[in-house]
Amino acid sequence: MGILNVTPDSFYDGGRFNTLDYAVEHAANMLAEGAQIIDVGGMSTRPNAQMISVQEELDRVIPVVEKLVQSFDQILISVDTFRSEVARAGFQAGAHIVNDISGGTLDDKLFETVAELGCPYILSHIQGTPQTMQVKPQYEDVVLEITKYFSEQVETLTAMGVKDIILDPGFGFGKTVTHNYELLEGIKLMAEVFDQPVLAGLSRKSMLCKPLGITPEESLPATSAAHLIAIQNGARLLRVHDVKEAKQVLEIWNIYQESIA
Image (cartoon, rainbow, N blue to C red; front, side, top):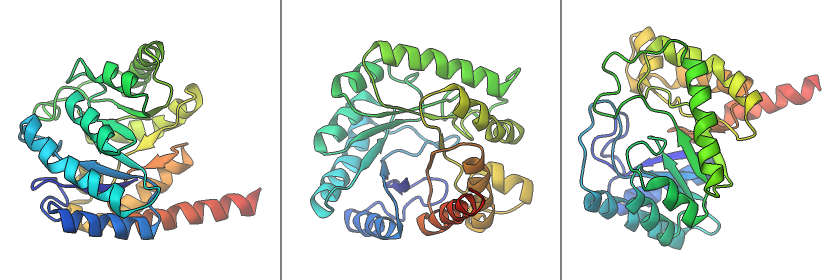
C-alpha cells in the first residue's frame, strides 16, 4: 500500500503531493514500483495534528480519487479517513477501501456507513485522538488489550454485515516506543488468532527514529528492517512511503522462503 498524503502537514511528506498533478504523478511512480493499493489521505493524523473541517478534507481527497480513477485502469484506492462523510464520498468517487485510523471511535456513523457501502474496511487501534494519543499512553499488556479490542470490533462489524476486514495495530497511535516493539512481536499472535489479514504501518515512524536518534528522512534502512520483521511475524500488507524498497524486502523474503521450502 503506497501512501499518498495530499496534506500540507504530514510528518514525513507533508506538502509534497498536495496538488492534483503532483499527487497523480506520485501515484503513477508508486504503481510503477509495485504498489497494489494507493492510500489517499487528506488530513494529517500525526501527533498533535490540527483538525480540519469535513469540507476541507473532502476538497483535498475527492478530486484526487476521481483523477486517479480516470488516469489508471484497475487501480485500487483506499481513503484514509475516520469520517463517514469522507468515506462515503470517496467510495462514490471510485475508491474501494476505507482506512480508518480510529477504529470507528471518532465517528459513530463510520461502521454503519462501511456496512452500507459494502466495502473492505481497515480496522485500526488508537488510544485517544491524534491530539492526545501520545500523552502518556498506558496499557497493562498492549498486545492482549489490542487483540481483545480487535475481537470485539470484528464481532460488531461482522454482525453489521462487513465482510472484508483488515487489522492494523496502529503503530504510533497512542503507544510508546516500547509498546510499538511489543506490538511488532504481537503480530504473530494476531495473525494466528484472526482470519483477517494484519496490516503493518511502520514506515519512517518515530518508533524507528527515536531509538536511533535520526530523522524520518534518514530512516529508510530502519524502515526496511521493521518491514522484514513484520512480514516474518505474519503481516500480510505493508503501508509504505517507499514502494520500491518495500517491494525489494518482500521479494527477498519470498526468495528466501522458496529456497528453504
